[in-house]
Structures are given as structure tokens and as C-alpha cells.
Image (cartoon, rainbow, N blue to C red; front, side, top):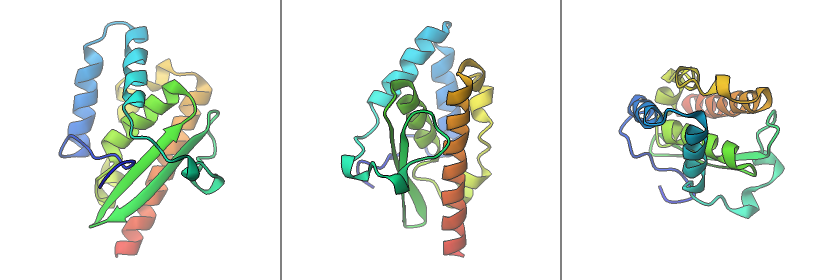
Length: 150
């Protein structure tokens, strides 16, 4: 799958989570971790401006966040973007874990990894709520894709 959809570098969602954890542990300071998250966001494939419309917008986010799914060959590919740098980075993290996976793997992957990374506790309440809304949207897309495949 090509840009703007994210192609995972790790073979599974659990490997992606482990890689994020390893990369986060490299930094002692939360400001450095935030910079890393922002850098991940900068590296996210460009989301087409034409896709930044209401049907792709994730409700419940303080910032604007858009997501576009595509089911191909039994895998769910995701593209996403935000108008806020830190949120763009959080989108990049989630797409690294979830994009290119089967709907079943997405649904089997506990989103608690964000808490395990001690990320949610270090975000504002509004950003935490927004990320929860994005995870709910990804899981709803995966649920619909799994039902479609059945």
C-alpha cells in the first residue's frame, strides 16, 4: 500500500508497541519524548487536503484529526493527520501500531499500551480524550471490516 497509507516497519502490532517502548526509554525527560512524538508526526505520509472533510474527521478531539481506512487483501491500511503537531505525532504512533494489520489483529491489540508507555498520564485531558476517540474510531473501522470479511 502506498502513501498516504502507513506501511508498518514492524511485522506485528505487538512488535510495533515494543519498538515504541524501546524508543521512548532512550529519553529520560518528557520534553525530549514530546520532541520525539512530534518528529514521528513530521514523518507521517502527507494526508491529501481533499480528504480533510467531515466524514473523515474524528469527533471528540480538541484538535482536528482525520482518518481514512482502506481494506485490501485482508489488511486494514490507515492514513491520518492532525492540525496540531503533538497530536499528529500521536496519530503517527497509533498508525504505526494499527495500519497494515488484519482487522482481527487490530481488535486483539489492547490500546492500553499508551498507558503502559506512560503517555496518557502526561497528556492534557483534552488530548487524552482525543486519542481515546481516535482509538475508538480505529476499532470501529476494524470491527466493520471484520464483519464485512465474515
